[in-house]
Length: 486
Image 1 (spheres, rainbow, N blue to C red):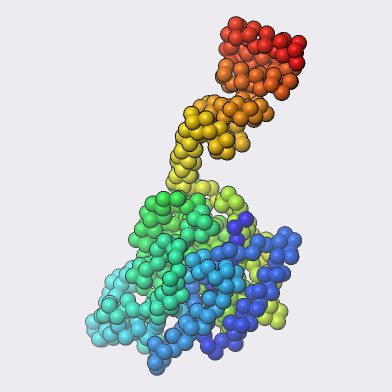
Image 2 (tube, rainbow, N blue to C red; image 1 turned 90 degrees about the vertical axis):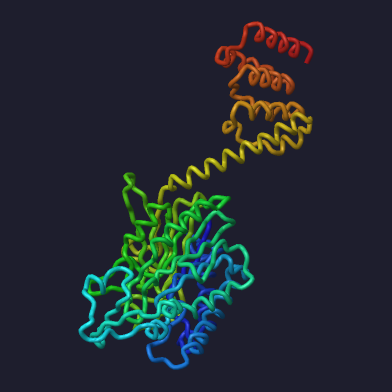
């Protein structure tokens, strides 16, 4: 099974009441607990961090750059030690996305000017998608983004941290501070992860989550062009996709539907500081499903946690076919220690199981890849048989004779005969589909002095493969001689 450690909302800062040392100690101790549970949980070999890496800064903070660097230094130390603890230091298997706490409010505010009285925009212009206007409830005034170049720097501290953390790390297909998504390759290339920035348009006055639609379509095209073909596509972002009345700090669920229709089958996020584990469906016209997995906050303080919620994280265990997942929820209830959660939504269990169908695009690519690999292997076998290098040919044979086409079976029989491996000849020739298969099987049984089995084969299959009577008589005569002379 493939296992992913899903953390969110780290809120790292130098003055956090839960230090990196304590947090890593709790995660290590819990690892030993869940390895011994029944059923045991597979130790994660990849890590997803779905945003809010640091606590962030209030408006009006002095020496912003230095304060942000101090917070990201704490976060970098934590993630580096986490990689050492779980991944033998392989940072290419850690996926990180930004959250709203990573957006520097001071930078975004400096890029805005107050709209003078009498020049306020109409509501249809002020609150449309990608509007340059912002409304401040505190002052009850409109502001306008006047310096887009400076506004775009609101995540610069985050990207500086990312570039430090992944410096000299190979094996990441796409990671670019000027892009709204990154692309990671997990588990030897079987799983592709699109890491989205869901803070598009998010700033000191706008708390909503959003992903650029072009980011979703571009990631879809890039993942589909991967030469080795990802078998499972995962999307990671920060914001939750629904919220209570009078709240606006979540992301449009249509963006998730957009992902589902493009082949993403697992979505991972955080932000709301509580777990949420459910399938999301669309019909196009057949139903397509995504397992949508929200992680609780790893480090949010008591005032930031929803009523009745604890600090939490998830472990996702994927089946080997990558078409289902068991999501385990771990939570900190006692003495700053993690243990299994008790989820009332599933009868008190600590996990939820979710499944999906493989997208048609991926299924077609995998079938084409498999056929190409088979064709290449058969060509190699053919070349070895023609060169009478029967051992090399035999080493390439599939043990599953029933999956072979007629030509590959013929090569398998020839290679086995060349090695006088009569049991292998029988394996590949029975049940016989052609006259030559039946002849080879009868001859092989004769060679190992099992003429009775050879006669049964002739009796059962001679008519089915349309063997001429003359050939059948010759084989029976050969068996008679074999039985007489031994």
